[in-house]
Image 1 (cartoon, protein in one colour):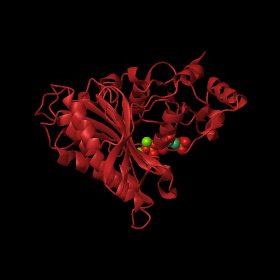
Image 2 (cartoon, rainbow, N blue to C red):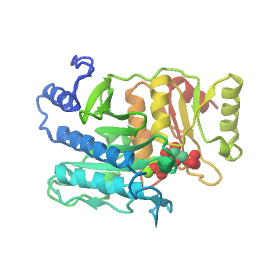
Image 3 (cartoon, rainbow, N blue to C red):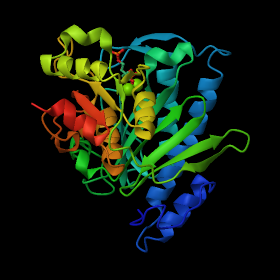
Image 4 (spheres, rainbow, N blue to C red):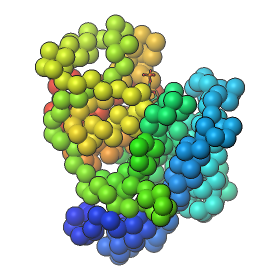
Length: 331
Ligand SMILES: O=P(O)(O)OC[C@H]1O[C@](O)(COP(=O)(O)O)[C@@H](O)[C@@H]1O
Ligand SMILES: [Mg+2]
Ligand SMILES: [Mg+2]
């Protein structure tokens, strides 16, 4: 959308998401407004899911749903609710022709075949934390479709590769609710003012510290990590770094983005290809990491350079402050 950063556009902290989108778009003469509308639709979906999460314990949407998703994971009721709400908001918005979701095996065609965009999403990230009131999130990745407008989207649209993302972001449902995204330039964060029901620019042009002293990893898997990863973790401890891991990728990523740090989900004996999903977890966060001065690797090269082959493929991931990612990759 905009070829200018929030800084260059002199967009003040405190501006609403709507106004931010409008002003950013005005800096790009050829913008036609569809991506702007799509970002608004995502903001709306975020508010709706935020409301559902806040009252989950009061109404019967806490706990397991008794169903499994394509990954063989037990779906939580809120996984389903978030999935339905997000799909509905994108359908009603009219800009998205198709969606790929962690909770559905195949492409969801929205019926908006004239929509220019496709979205890959993790409707509810950090499912193991849903019922225990720990931060959870939603992750999204946006592409321009490559198949003809008016036709049904196909696999080709979703397997374009991470560098073809035109926007990506997440919504963090934590002590406050935040929407953080980039449309290719800088990364900006908006905090939901619950009383106004508005996302307000609170974190402008976020830049990830080059180095950090926080490492986020499931230490419970320590003995099933490769020796090089074990050595890296031992070094972090010898250096007195802080171990911080809440088990919600969005929450761990967000902390490290602001404070400096690294999140690792390496391959394990149980998940030799890694646990996290390339299209709707690794790619979008790698996009944000790179746009904010950080790095994201699968241990062999940049996450964004991985050529995708299937919708729900997994990848090891090392993401965060540049120096820390370089350190873990050192031979
Ligand atoms: O329990 P583990 O193995 O440490 O895995 C935790 C990781 O898995 C996830 O929960 C996977 O995401 P979902 O909750 O969307 O399936 C991440 O948010 C988190 O970082
Ligand atoms: Mg997830
Ligand atoms: Mg999920």
